[in-house]
Image: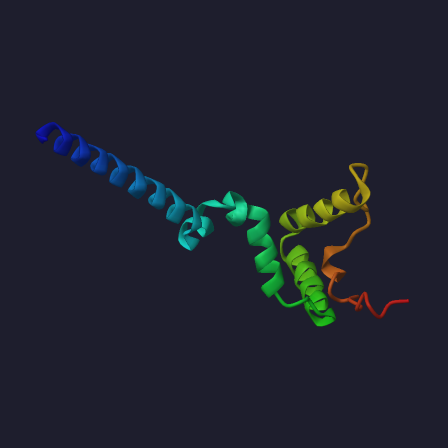
Length: 121
């Protein structure tokens, strides 16, 4: 009788432990916090962060573009050697590597002859 009690206690303990393990796996698999943390590992990738930032940024207006254009020209006028790097970068991005800088460029007249590029025909 003592052996039967010991065996039944051991079997009860084993069944209880296995049940707890099964339920913990089951509940762990449906826990919302675990799903949010591990289900989609690239939720914080650079691309998704950039999409979130772009979604919250306002669209640039014509006035923003005109102000940026004037600022760039003033920057070039004040320090030609550094400012021309921006111009050459734009040229390379749009036209490729065979962009040649004009030899007759007069940096003193950049802002004197300024006209809004959106209104030039």
